[in-house]
Image (cartoon, rainbow, N blue to C red):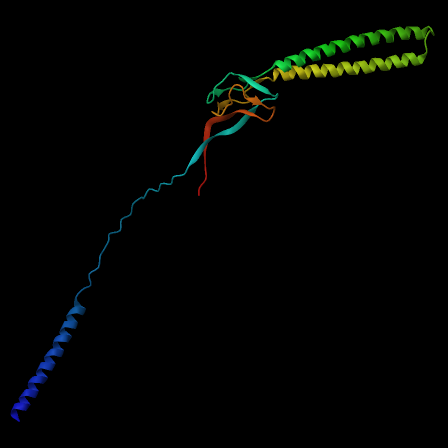
Length: 214
């Protein structure tokens, strides 16, 4: 009986010792600090670089076009060259325009000759009418003929002026000062009046960069 009592006391002691050890271990783990990583925050300027594809364009760019049609037979400048207002740039084949001037001059001379004759006839008819040698209607008809011929002379004068203007326009001048683009046409290019761009001129100060942000 005594041995069983001692054995029970020993077992209880072991149980209490085990429970006490577990509580102590748990308490030790709770008291230990948790390890964490710390990073020092610094304040500084971070450069930002953005890259885009762009194209340099001139300000107030203008296309150079001829006022008459024909082949380019001569260039007085080169692409990329700086030019001033009124400077010669291109020459258009002027053979047909020289021929047109000659034809217009001949037509005008012919019509002026006819007008001079009609006026002479009118003067004669007026003198005959005063002496009652011809009717008044004859004089009226001759006056109408003179007015008609005067209109023809005026029309031929306008045609001659136009032919001369067309001939002058075979020389293409710079409409503004600036720099020529490198896309100017070559000799032999067929230019259509008011349609073909022979070159482009733009101001070089300042220039702009044209690009799209995607």
